[in-house]
Length: 374
Ligand SMILES: Cc1cc2nc3c(=O)[nH]c(=O)nc-3n(C[C@H](O)[C@H](O)[C@H](O)COP(=O)(O)O)c2cc1C
Image (tube, rainbow, N blue to C red):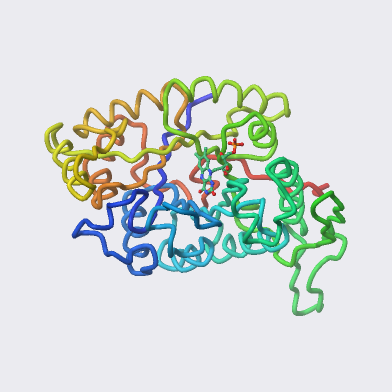
């Protein structure tokens, strides 16, 4: 089978995924709660033909957290706004299965999928146990997180099939609005959640939202092998080789094609026209840090050619179907789009135009048939 092209994602995390980047003169100090900033970044990523905007999340504030987490947008809310100023780029929000309620999440993400005309994704994570205290779940513990996640995913996927694709007739002449035989309550009763259904949102242009997941443990892999379509992963090449092997083995054991699970490592590239220019950007970032501190050199750092070479290597090795980038340097997206994207296009591994207007379509993921379809 022909290898799909490389996909690109951008994480917008306001003032940055670090402690001191907010001090840079080019970053609005309130970027994490500045809608104009998010709009500007979303449009920039779409101009770069990125597949998706991805938002990480936090559900509990603890000591020493990065400034971005202290006051930030809730994911689905901001992505709804971004859907109105973009047309083709995907929109994926992180919501933890340990805290939220499956009916609400199914409804929110399905609504985002409708509002964006088929561009929504949901990153289903367990998150760390800290958040239990914010969501009236202090009686639960770490051991509950994966059994809960399994139930949560079964429910959400079931709710997204509440209506078959042709359930709504909406014929004014005959007065028939919908076909009740094509509406399916889920009637789920688990140890953590009980949901009758059906969901009051019908299927979208891409069938249902794309399911992302992030984690590393064996428990994680076992749930992901059944339910995930994209895995957000740490960006270490050697680690990824083993991880992807183990994961894909489990995907196959579930009777799924390993090709239908995309691997998405995340990186914070720092690129320049030359090696020297990239190094200067790194030093600039360090100048905001307390005296004596050094920023670890990112894996994807250097001249644009050099960075594009590395990306191609990862892609061809099968450990990077989607490259997810965050920007540590304030012009990180801009630099990547202007300097690296054209090289990836010349290599023939990245698109020049969007193939589709749905997230699933651009990621070349199969259309999920409704489970009740006869
Ligand atoms: C690549 C990656 C991204 C993650 N992103 C988030 C996030 O945005 N918010 C969050 O609360 N936890 C995030 N997590 C933490 C996981 O939800 C989970 O708590 C952690 O991986 C420990 O579980 P595990 O041992 O099963 O992997 C992330 C983990 C990984 C590996």
